[in-house]
Image (cartoon, rainbow, N blue to C red):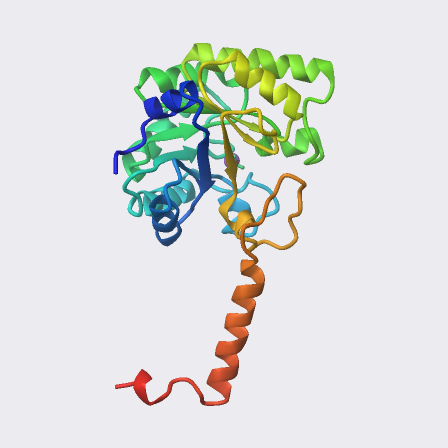
Length: 265
Ligand code: KIV
Ligand code: NA
């Protein structure tokens, strides 16, 4: 396999090839996602929800993100690995943002970082890029700001927020970001943004007019049950399949069917 780089992604956009991206938080899942040919693996701070059971992404720490990212990096051979800077590791000042990004690169071996926001984090993005660390932006529904929004509904439906999003997207491209995630915004707006930029726009709940798609792996596998947004396509019903397997195992243990004569020494 030829490794995917930040440059490959821009090339994919210019030849009209859509970019596939999924999350992973551990070695075994990363191996499977990478082996299936997914272009980008995101070590998302959604680990806070999916792995740790928190209600929001806010509690996960930089140390915990580095643990997840280093596990993922050991599992991949082709995919580009993007690691989320968690809440609190970059908002206070650009120097702290750079320190956090450097820790991720040195301690996990990830290939790039992602952070949420537009002009509020411009100086931090510039500092990180100046250190040679590729940065992916993230606009629209930015879950680290959930207490400001108050809800997880679609963002930028009104003209004022839509205009700010367009300005922020252009700023991120000009600052040197290699791609942008657009989360839960109207499809028409997302397409407009994608068409106005040369860097790829990767959507989640942002329609088909963008340059790639990202989903949380546990959601698309149907492991999570309670989370049912319209944009989510489930490719498996893993929740049911796993429940059946666990029930069968328990039954087999209790009925002394497992282990059988061949399953022992
Ligand atoms: O943390 C995450 O999984 C993300 C994606 C939903 C884009 O940021
Ligand atoms: Na995230």
